[in-house]
Structures are given as C-alpha cells and as structure tokens.
Image (cartoon, rainbow over all chains, first blue to last red):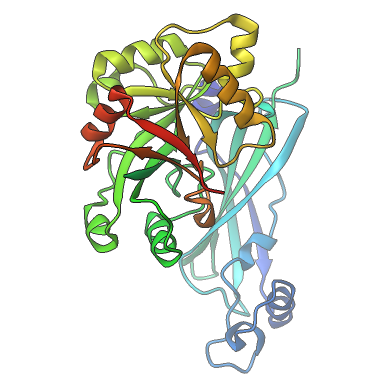
Length: 145
Length: 208
C-alpha cells in the first residue's frame, strides 16, 4: 500500500453530494444536546437565531469513502471532526454538502503506523453561499502481516 | 533559563493549541518557564513569525520539528534550509542514522523523543537492533509519558552516556510546562539553543 500513490489518485476527488433541510427544532435540539446556553442558539424568536458553530458536523454523507477507494486496513477509528464556519446556518436553509477527499497522510504512534484519511464536506445554502466546512479524519491501521 | 523543548500548535494535524494561548496560559499560571519550542509533526513551519508575540508575552518562542524514523520520533533543533533539503520531513520511515548525520552536517541537533514509548520510541528499537552512532542527547522527560516510559528512557540514557532534555509534548494548552530543560546559558535564539545543546550544560526537569 503506497500512500503517496493513493494521495495522488484520490485527493481532491468529489465523490458525493447530499442535501439537508435545517429546521428550528433541529437547531434547538442540537443546541441543547451540546449544552449551549446562548439564546441565539436556543430561542427561535431571537432576532439572530442560528445554529451553533459545530451544527453541520451532525450531517453525514451518503458515502464515507469513494467507490473503489483502496483497502488500507481492517482496523481503524474515528479521529474527530474539525469545523470551519464561514457564515451562520439558519432555520429554513437547504444545505447542500459536497464531499471530497481532502488529504491522505501517514504517521506513526504508540499503536504503530496509521493512515489518516480526511473526508471534507463543504456546506452551501440554497443560494450557493459557503457556510461551513467539516473535515472528518478517519484513521486506518494497515493489516498486520 | 528554562525552556520547554517539545510542543505542538494547530500547525500539527493533531495539535489543538494556538501559540497565543500557550503564552496566555504560561503567564496566567505563572509557569516557571522562560519560553518554548514548537516542534510540529513531520514539517518545519517556515511561515509563522512569532516575534510580535514574543514581545507581547515576554516569552522566547523558537521553532524546531519532530520527524519520524526507523528508531522512533526525533526532535530537530536548528532546522535550516540545508537540513530541509537533506531529507523529506514528511516521511515516516526516515533512517535515524541519516537524520543524526545530516543534522550534524547542517549545524542542527537531533534528539530522539519519548524514547520509552512503544513503537515510536528509541528504547525498544535499541533492544531489538542495537544503538545508533551519533546520538548523544535523548528526551528523558516527556510530558505525555505513561508510567515506566521515562524510567526506561533514563535507564537507556544512563547506559549509553546520553544527556537528557525535557519537553511537554503538549498538544493542548494546559499541557505546556509539564516537562522542560534548564540551561546554564542564556538562550536568545535557535543558534544559542543549538550551541547550548552541543555544550551539554543543561538538565531535564519534570514539572508535573
């Protein structure tokens, strides 16, 4: 398994598009779940009512990896999501998420070699404005020989 | 002068701390360190300029790197253009002997870090394959070590006559200052740091 080759072939490839409706109830329930106390995130009557910054991380695409993406290892784990906010997500938005492979890289750790795959979802609203980018890092550990 | 020699900022893929926040934390908590080195994973951060932050915080902020070799991870101090061209910092299978040799040639210092850690530490590789010529300093106190790991590092350092340094291996703000290195000399820049490491007048500190 050559990570450099995988990187060259797959990084930048857009492989999925998914749409999500944003409702007041979704925003309020997410805000409660993550412990928000700011009325901007909890009160639909607030003049600046909007979703909290990490809201878009709740959405998942239809595919985790592109079809035919190389098998790297059977073991792995979720290495977390990083959210970059470009603008407020509001109730009534119809979000369109474009998924691509943003990076593939190797590192070594206590448990041995690991390959990190970064699945990036760019969220735009119905007007095409980019509102949020979510980088989801997945770790794959090469199979033991 | 006390410096924390091993820290990661958001420039590293797994770093969650902004350099400004490290400075705020050190000053707010009145940690007994005079500065720190940013040793980003598998890269050298050429772009960032922390001079303004140094002036504002009163702390020395230096840049190094942490690369990955066949004997585990290695800190590099005194990284310059020559060293950046000597090997690929992003590779995970660098040869330690080459990293040590090229660092010496380019005027830098290579220091294997967290030697007692499984897979990515020097000690287990030494047991399996023997020592590597040219190593003279190892990180004997690492802020992220688990029980027994620093003890193993100290034992190997003692066995081979290596000097020891300390670094926090901080990836989040509150972990800075857990281990550090006390220098007899005053360190003002990376050249001073390299000189002091070569001189050997320092000791590792555990501050946890």
